[in-house]
Length: 133
Image 1 (cartoon, rainbow, N blue to C red):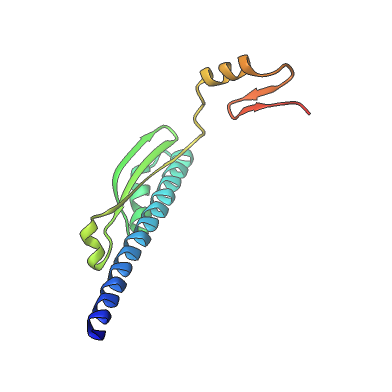
Image 2: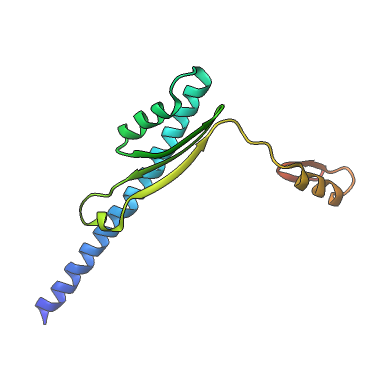
């Protein structure tokens, strides 16, 4: 009886360890994607160098592989992947996407609709309606 209970507890601990490893790998992938996108966008604004090459270099420093890199002017979108170690690798790669670059302009349609609904004297921007106090 005790040996069976010990086996169940051990199996649950191993499962928790595997899931924790997968979650940590997912967080590492997100961090690597963010840093690679920021480095690539920084390269795009500073020089006309290899933007995606910079993203690959930074991702590699964080244990990730760039799966996709798209650069459009100062805008950079990156997808990276990290294979979890050990038994968590059965779940496949942890993938993450990130974008870095100048703020994208919002569509003017929501702002126009907000202005039409706003009370008199209210300020309307892309973030919504602010009433004057």
